[in-house]
Length: 197
Image (cartoon, rainbow, N blue to C red; front, side):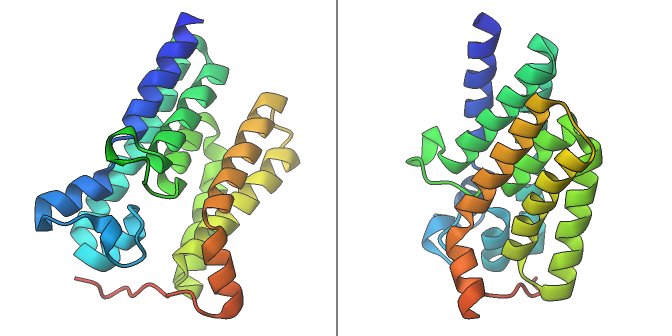
């Protein structure tokens, strides 16, 4: 019980460190959530601040999930690793330090799942990259990455706890993209430009 509580607490606090918000404040003295899409994630940082800050934010968001999952693994094995990883995603989306308004959880979730199910995340990551390259819709890449993760966790007959983790995590991230889905359907979603500064 102590290990579970510690894993959840540390994972959530790690997730609550919003690199997108901190980078906006440090570089420009702005709240990134007041610009562009209003989101604190990598894509909005890329559009608002440029390529280098976005790479930094991406690395930070990935590491939050990786570290939280690794802590859980160390304290109690793979099941606790999943708990820690998911706690980091919740922290990223609802950050304690920033009024519970954060990002959408894709990068942090990917980092956590990469530790716990690297084979599935390689497929999901490839799907994401190819979707973004072909369509220039980051949101669509995240959504399809989640769908592919759900498919392959069953195709490859992963243990039941891992199935629950991947399904729940993927659906959570997809749900966070629900407004993007509406805009995609209406043809109103913004495409990413690869020539950002």
